[in-house]
Length: 117
Image (tube, rainbow, N blue to C red):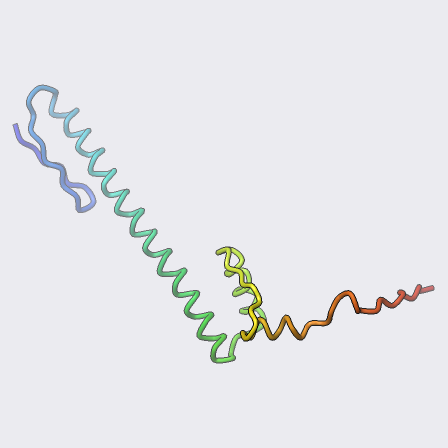
């Protein structure tokens, strides 16, 4: 006996040769559901990848336009940190210039704190 089971847009087809039709159909439904779950998980992964890329592009655009707010800068900082993105200052780059303009910490004079009464 040949049978087919459709669930969530997926169809499993089989033939009955020994076990009862009920147990074969139950197995087929399980296989169909597992296929449906695998596709759903892939769709979710694709959606999350799209969101991740979209956020990166939006923040990059705002940064380049100069319209990024302080809270968006904090989101960008955390986004980079969460994705293990870091940079090393290199001579001739904006980051390298920023670091070269920082004061030498060994030459910073520490002033004693005033005590409040």
